[in-house]
Length: 66
Image (cartoon, rainbow, N blue to C red; front, side, top):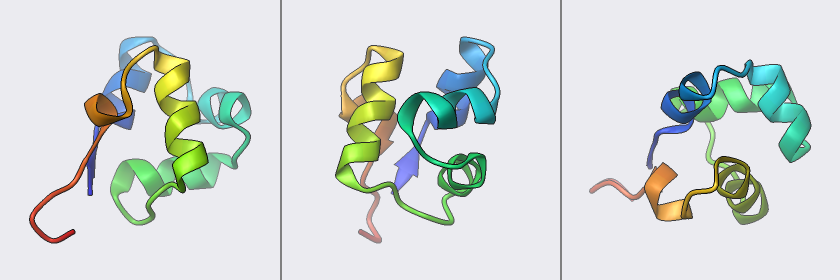
């Protein structure tokens, strides 16, 4: 799964910790998601999308390995 979390986070100039607090996960989880080491569950993906005011499909995208 590809994601654009870091891109959107940097665009609005917030830290990983600020995003993590806003969506109810650890800063480490945001880091793992950004690096593609972990996939967010559907609730976290929806919260991240809502935070940025974007559709989930704008931030998260399946790739050919999914």
